[in-house]
Image 1 (tube, rainbow, N blue to C red):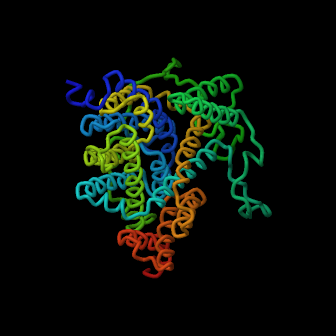
Image 2: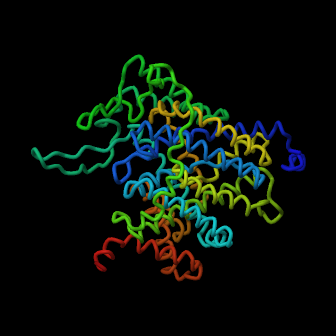
Image 3: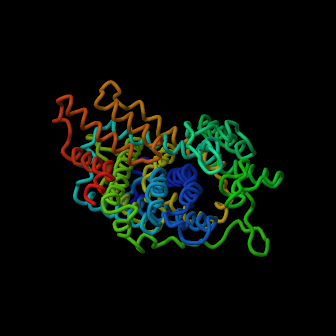
Length: 497
C-alpha cells in the first residue's frame, strides 16, 4: 500500500531509505525548535511577551507550537504533495516578525499580518500570479535577498551571543550623553569576557568541524553539546544571567537563558512535560489590528505583509527547485512534479504559522540532507513530521538552551545563505549595485525590507538610466513604486497631515 501510494519503487527508493532520509532531515533542521523560541521570546510594542507571562513561559509555549505546526505541515506535504520536503518556521522570517513587526505593534497584530500573508500567497498560487511575480524579478536580485538575510541572521547571532555588542554612549556631564561614533564593538569594551563566550566559540567550531566531516545533524549536535557543556559550566561556576535587575547587568553572564536543568515546583527534575499550546489561535485574535495601529498604519502594514510575502515567494521556489533536481523529480523541461500541490501546502503553512503564533512556516533547504540519504517520496516527510510531533513533549528542555549555545547555528546558516553570492552577475552594474545594496543594508539597517526595497528601487533607476527600461517588468516597477512610498512614508504623512 505504501509503495503504491508514494510510488516508492517507481522512484527507485525503499521504505527503509525513506525512513532514514526522514530522520536525517529532522536531525538537520530540529534546531528550529530551539532557535525559534529564542527569537520570538521578546517583548512586543506593548512590552508583553507572546502568550502572556514571562520570557521562560514564552520560550516553552513557542517551542511546543513550533514543533506542532512543523510536524503537521510536514506530514501534510508528504501525504498531499508526495515530495521529500519538510517545513518549519522560517529563519529570517521569524526575525523580521519579531524585530520589524511585533516591536511596533502587538504579537496578536504581528501574527495577524503573517496569517494574512499566508492567505494572500495561497490566493496567488491558485491564480498563477505567484509564478508571474517570481519571473518578474531578476535572478541575481533573488539571490541577493537570500544572501542579505544570511548576513542579517549572522549579525543577530553575533549580537545575541555577546560576541559583538553595542558601544556605550559617550557621557557628557551627569545627564547628557552622545552616541558613540562606532555603533558596535568586540565583546565588552573591546574584549571577550566570561564563560558564555567560551561556550559560543566552542559551539561554533564544533559545528564547523562536524560540517567539514559531513556529519549528519551537525547543527543539532552543536547546539545539544554546547548546552550540556553550558549546564556543567553553570553548575561549577555559577555564572548567572546577564540581567541581574532593571538597573544592574552582568557583562559576563548568560545573555538569555540560565542553563540549569528544569525542575518542577517540588524540585524534581522535569525534562519532559505535557506540551502547552498557548499561542494557538493568536493570529485570529486581532487580524487587522496592525492596519489601524498608529505605530504602523495602513501603508506600513501593507508593505510589511508584502515583505513577508516576497520572502516566502523566493525561499520556497528556490528550495523546491533545488530539492526536485537533487531527487530527480523534474521533467525534461525542468518542471517539478506536483509543483502546484507543493506550493499550496507551503502557502497553507505560511498562514498556519501565523494562526498558531509561531511565525510563517516555509520549506527547508535542509531537506536536501534527507534526499542525500535516499529520500525520494513524501513518506520521508511524514517520518520527519512524526519526529517533530514527538518533540512537543520535550519543550521544557528548550528553556535551558542559552543564546551562546544556539547562536552558532545562526552563523552557520548565514554562511550557507551567503555562499550563493557567487551566482550574482557583478559585471552588470544594473544588477551588481542593487544586489550590493540589498545585501549590506539588511544587516546595517537591521531591517530586511529596507534591503529589499533599496535593491528593487536602485535596479529600476539604473535600468532606466541605461536606456534598458524594456528589461524592467511592469510588476517590478509597481513593487519599486510601493517601496518608494515606504521609504518616504514620514514626509508623505507630514504632507497629508
